[in-house]
Amino acid sequence: MFSANDFIPSPYSHSIETGKFQWSSPSNIALVKYWGKKDKQIPANPSVSFTLNNCKTITKLAFAKKQNQDTFSFDLLFEGKPKEDFKPKIQQFFERVLVYLPFLKKYQFTIDTQNTFPHSSGIASSASGIAALAMNLMSLEKALNPEMTEDYFYQKASFLARLGSGSACRSVKGKVVVWGEH
Image (tube, rainbow, N blue to C red):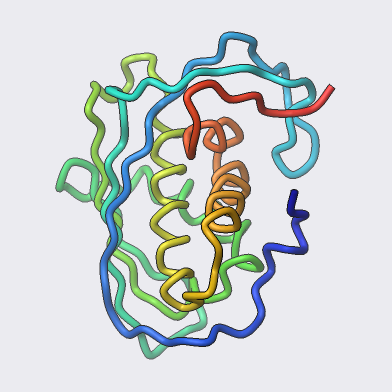
């Protein structure tokens, strides 16, 4: 089991100028819901959920190194069209995970996302969307640090996803997922 400090990377061994990745993450439904969160998106009580493999978010992440590395820079497309009202959530996510992904301000990102189910249909697309984005960002980090193990990759992806949307950690891996401790 990794702690938050284990997810703060050492200097990267490789560099990459441009590229793209694509991940899909299933939405999830809680069988036992959590009732509130503590600090850093930790659930107040454990929950049990299962993933909906046919209800997923597919996210493509394109990136290119940029000159000005003082701010986050990203475009967000939903179903191929700009979606400005999603940007504050991504901005907040980037702010929360910057210490764990210090390369975020070094790239211009294009995030192109879509669901295999209707948006605002009652199926949690924010969880699957953040999970898919976390997986893409971890793919970039793995390109920067090819020595990363598969276990570390998935543990950190789940950790990062949780910081974006609590239940997103349940959409990274697994058919039935327990989130939280009792």
